[in-house]
Length: 454
Ligand code: HEM
Image (cartoon, rainbow, N blue to C red):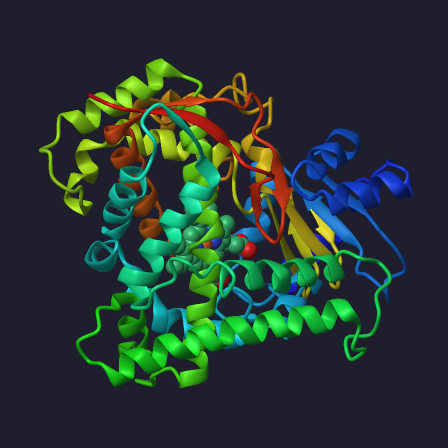
């Protein structure tokens, strides 16, 4: 530790960002594209403030692969999830794997990890194809559909009925909507330099609390339903009930199981649905790419697709990877430096909020040729080797990377292949509008013309 601190002392502080205050604040509030504006003004590692330290911590933003690696690849509590964003999320929604500080997180991750191995998700990961068959079965031949609404319906159906054991089909109002209200409240509070004290019952806080109670009720319903009926198919919920910490042998308490179910509902819904919507929209603009996916899936036997088909859907996987590059559902991330640390060759003082621009690095013209062009060939096995590990990280990296990455890739790939097998899609919107809740989602309906594929 001594030599580490010693080396740090000789490093310079990151350059101060020259953007005027209002522009800095606006950039932080639009945290998907704002990081690119801060980078263009201040460089790949840049520091700035939004107010006095006692109101909001000073920030250092990293948008280079090396800077992002230095933030994410830390394997102790010197860089932790104790930023205002995660603190607010924990306050409003409860403590879960995604927001626990290091010490409590270690055992939780160890306990839940086996639930999500590549092998384990094969058991419950194939339901998206089934849901996709049902959803596109109702599409009007030669009519128009909102790809985003369809993707959401499909994700909720797959996640609810088959994975968690309850019917969530018609229940966006019980899950999706309240989650959005609670998380939007958390993020808006976190990035506001001046905010009302947490105990003050403002209307926004009351709404967020009520929304959180609704989601907790659904989680409790899932757990009770599993306990009451041993035959109920709910592989993900059952895996959580059965999970044990391999070191202590401890099971999760009911409250912890519910908290984790909530993070799965949140992490497994909007993120997956938006990735699918974006991939469909992009293919709807590129007949050549869509034909390649259609040809790949046509070469498979005509039965519902399952995890065993993934090795023969290589191009479809590349399409999903490219969708995640241009539209990463978590466009920006944060951590807190609990000690002085190095980021991209600069010294960062303890108490600084570390921000990293996932969308910025994944669209950086210095790292990607024609960065805004949708080109799944970037992920061709020959070319993917040339990428720096830290320039493409839709599922994060280091110890706190996404636990559901295999699950999500499996689900989106199977859903996409199933939909393209059944329908030809022509996108009607030139642009894909983006909106920020906690994650980045489509900012409105994404209309497409659909025709049955023969
Ligand atoms: C396309 C879909 C998804 C994307 C793009 C995605 C992305 C991410 C990212 C970037 C992180 C790291 C956040 C950070 O570094 O602060 C993360 C964490 C996490 N994700 Fe996902 N995710 C997806 C789907 C899922 C699914 C399906 C689940 C579970 C059912 C899930 C559960 C989690 C959990 C529990 C964490 C926190 C892990 C930890 O801190 O130990 N995600 N996700």
